[in-house]
Image (cartoon, rainbow, N blue to C red; front, top):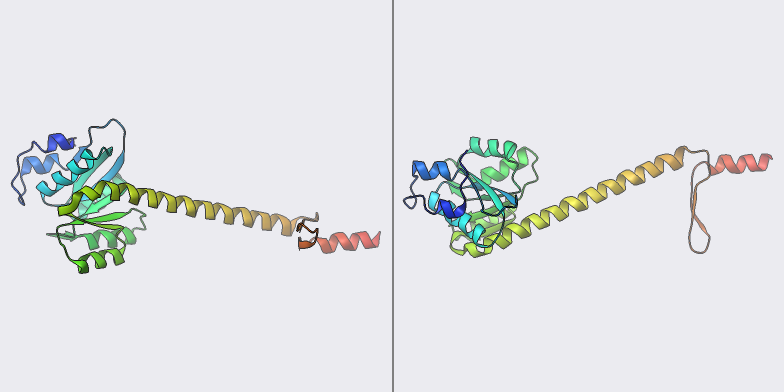
Length: 215
């Protein structure tokens, strides 16, 4: 698959709002010119000119990225499985696909990938509908300067949420292991507060105390 930087992409001839075969093929996969692997971006967009503007705005900000563009359901599912993007940028409406469809497929497949709506529709109803469906943010194509910060903030937020969930799961596992140990050991396990008052004693205390009395 042809790799193309945003700067190279801008040199590909196209007609606004129309699909040019050469440009379309080139823009299916593109990378920033930065050496770091960066962010994996899946762009759901059918208008080549708009795709170029989005890519150039990301590169202008200094964000290292690798981007693949799709414009239909089958390609979208293929890239979700093979490309495993960090973030999805989706136009609201494509000829045979939409941002709502993209969000629904993420839920259907249980994928924790943030999606940012990037659209030319200046409709509050559209924004509310997509945010309720799970979109992380809403960017107008006429205000793309906010896009790089939105991408980075969204990824940072999602990573923090994943780390929090992982920490909570690890804590629950630790508590469960501790409970299993204390409830099944024959040794006495107890916890005291700062005043040396007992606030926990393992079930084995009955056996231990009974043995002590017997002696």
